[in-house]
Image 1 (tube, chains in turn green, cyan):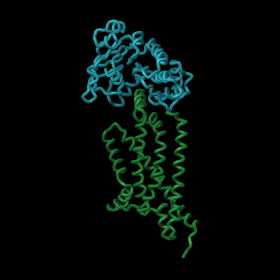
Image 2 (tube, rainbow over the protein chains, first blue to last red):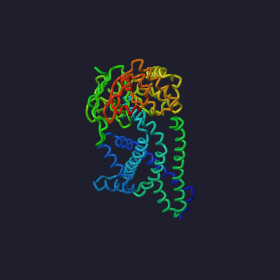
Image 3 (tube, chains in turn orange, blue):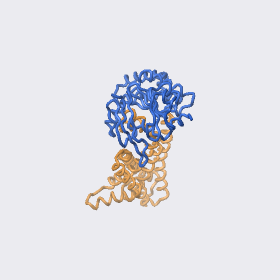
Image 4 (cartoon, rainbow over the protein chains, first blue to last red):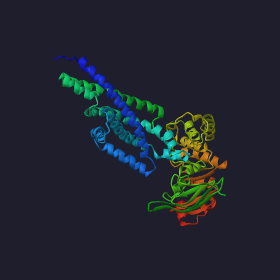
Length: 219
Length: 241
C-alpha cells in the first residue's frame, strides 16, 4: 500500500483550492454585476421592473442553492443541452449571489435619508445622476461589511458544487480521502484552507470600514 | 406675466385632500411668506412647485416651464427654482465646496474651474468662503443651512423655495440664516418661504399667504394681514382675540 505524507495530501488540496478561488471570484464578480442590475430594477419607478426583481430575488433566496445547482446541471440536460459542471456551477452561483447582493445593496440604498434624494432632485439631477454622485457613494460605505460578509458565504457556497462533480476543494477532499483513508486529517486540512480563505476577507472588511469612515466622515 | 403661476392646484393623498384648489401668482422679485398651522398644506404646496410632490389637478408653471411628471420637464423646472430644506440635506460625503460644485458640473456640465469659482463666490455671499474645504459635519446648523443656500444659488435659479429653513436651528443660529435671506430679498431674488418667523415675515415679505385646511384663507400685504386679520382662523393663529 502506498503511504501518503501530509505534504502529498496538502499539495493536492491546494491545487484544487485554485478552482475554489476562481469559482468564488467569478461568482462574486458576476453576481455583483447582475446584482447591480437587480438593484436598479428593484428601486426603479416602474412597477413591473420592481416586481420582476422582487420575484427573482424571492425565487433565488427561497430555494436551496443545491437545488439551483441541480437544476442548472441536470435541468438543462433534459433539453439536450450538455452543460459541463464548471458552467452549471458558475451560472448557478452567479444567479444566486446576484439575488443576495441585489437585496443587500437595496437595503443600503434605502438607508440613505430621503432628504438626500430630495435635495439632489431639487438641484435638477436625474435619477442616474442622483444614484451615481449622491446616493451610491454614501450607500457603498454602509454596504462594505455586509458585502464582504456575503463573499465569505460565496466561498463556502462553492463547496456545494462538489456534488455535481466540479473538482474544487471539497470534491478534492473527498477524492483524497478515498485514496488515503485519512478522513480526519484530510477534512481537517480542507477546513483549515477554507478558514484561511475566509478569515482575511472578514478582517479586510473591518479595515475597509474604518478607512471609508475616515474618508467620508462619520455620517 | 407672473414668474410663478399656480392655478387651481389640488393634491390628495388617497381620500385625504390636502390642497383644495390653490391659486397664487408670484411676480418677479416678490418675497412671499406662507404661514399657517401644521397640516394646513403649506409645505406640500411648496414641494409641489418644484415637483417633489405630484399634483392631482391644476397647473403650475415657473417662468414658462410647466410642471409635468417626467424627467425632462422636471429638470427644466428645477433649473428655475431652487429649494432649501428644513434639514439642510447637504451631501455628507462631499466638502462644502464639493456640495456647491456638484450640481453645476453634473447638471449644467460646467467645467470644474468655473464651478469652483462660482462656488467660492456663492460661499462668500453667505459668509462662508473660509469653509470651502470643510465637511458638513464640521459646521454648525446655521452654517450648514447657509451652505445649502449657496448650493441652491450656484444654480442661478429665478426663485427660491424655503421650507421652514430655520425650524431645525437653535435660536441663536436663526439670525445668521435670516440675515442671508434678507440680503437675497434686498437683491431682488424671488422668494417663497414657509416660515414661523412672524417678525421676519412682517419686516421682509411683500405678501403674506395664510393657509388653512388646504386653501389660501387670507392673502395680503404683511401690514394688513398682521394688523387687521379678517377671518377668525387667522386671528386665532396670530393669537389675537
